[in-house]
Image (cartoon, rainbow, N blue to C red; front, side, top):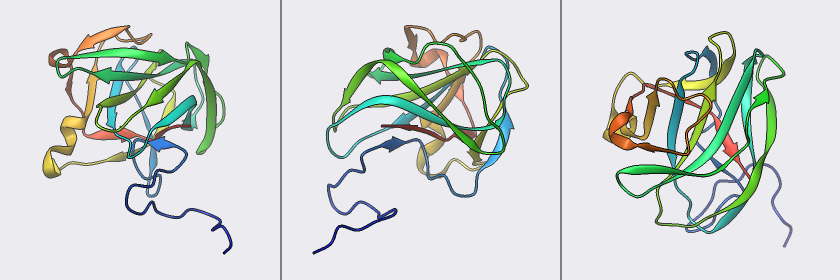
Length: 170
């Protein structure tokens, strides 16, 4: 039996060799707010170790930070970060940045991928939802004065967001 090629949806408890905040189809570029942090909840079906994060750049400008957080229900604690990096590329080009240390993600734990940017010119590809379907917007949050991303942040300090930036970790 041959191995399938291309994108194949996971079946049952299978896990792609990556984790992403949303499906990348139908995205468009959007600028963020200078010095804001954005958090997006993700989960995994099987254990996976990630060493890098990727984002889709609309317009390059300034610096950004990507990170992975774990939630204990009240506080998000940073597990790993890329540190500040210069945003490069445009028109949907992907930019991949290594994490400072690998992170082992396991099922049953709430993780958050985070992005912060230092300016309002850089844009990244994202999906927008103006309707809170099944509480999904509670999975997308933001906070001012969060660049670079903090070591921890109280969930109660975050406000709802109606957009999700595409971020992939593998």
